[in-house]
Structure formats: structure tokens, C-alpha cells
Image 1 (tube, rainbow, N blue to C red):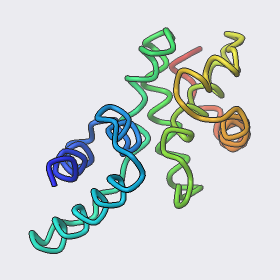
Image 2: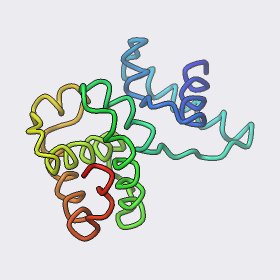
Image 3: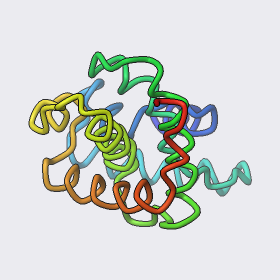
Image 4: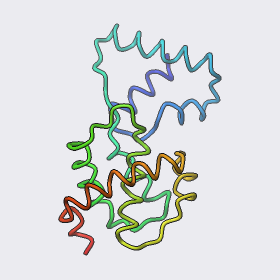
Length: 152
């Protein structure tokens, strides 16, 4: 129940932590993960808590720091993510993958020559997910180049 509360608190306060990260941090096995999900369900129903969706924007500052990227790409990244959320709802997609794909696409536009393998390893997503999300962001950048004006 404590882990379920912690996870919900992170989501509610837009702290960029996934359930898997919390589970790994406290070494939960598969059965305990199921139990925590059950506790989360009980917690929400008993306390009438709303289902809080994670926002990829909350991962941007963390990933910029983890990847040692320039801090000035934060603002255009957030704008690009907001546009992405309007055009392509993230249902079923990894929130981390969306955030990393955005940063990777911006790095490509800025000709920073990002290392795809390094991006994927540091952020915990696959290279395939990174490429797919990056292509989605490149379409948005192509149709709305003004989103990156602060970078140029």
C-alpha cells in the first residue's frame, strides 16, 4: 500500500518517475508488482481519487540533465510536446519514449549529432521506440517549424 501511495503521489505531483522505476528501486518481484497494482486500484476507489495521467513534459528537465543536453532546448521541447499532444494522443505509448523522441528530434534539427544508442540506454527505452517517436516529431516540426524559433 505504501508503494501504491508513493506512485500515486508521484503521478499527482508530476514527478517524473514510472512504476517500473519505483519497483526496481525497491526490488519488487512480479507478484509484488501485481499486489501494488491491486493496492493502487483499492486506493483510488476507496478515496475516490482521479486517475492521473503522466505527462511527458515532466520528463523533459530530467532527461536533459541525464543526457547532458543544452538547457535552452527545454522550452522548445515543451512547446513541441504540447503540439504533439494535440495531434497525436499518447494512448498506449510510452510516456518516456515520447519525451525522449522529442529531445532526439530537436537534437537532430540542431545538428547536435545525438547518439541513438546512448539516448535509449540512458533513458530506458528501446532504439526502435526512439526512432518511431522521433519520426512522429519530425512530421510535426516539418509542418510547424515556428515551434523551434527560440533555438535559431
